Length: 119
Image (cartoon, rainbow, N blue to C red; front, top):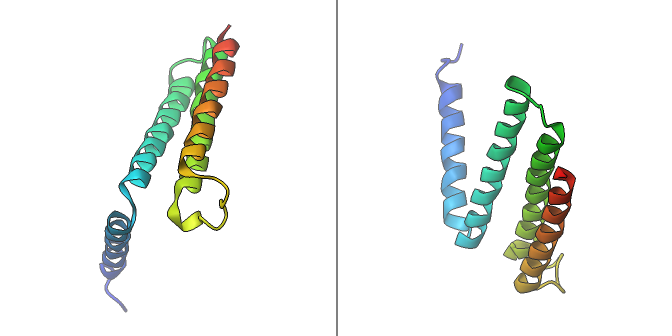
């Protein structure tokens, strides 16, 4: 029978290898976008937990805040895929500046609708 401590050790080694490869191979621009995606994910989780555990009294405020977080996450994930150098073949006509302009315009439109939904 194999020792039981080998499985967690292999998982730890795999996570460390993944983290090391991420730090070495990912550009600072993509790391910044990933940090923002992580923040948006945590923000959405906190909003959802607050709605479940505390209150959802102004329900339209919860829906606006949560949809804003989810929408911004989707727009940011799209931006990340467009500025990733490994995806240049898929986005031949889209420059990083154009991708950011699309992201900014989409964010403005998203938050306009969120603000109007609040009432």
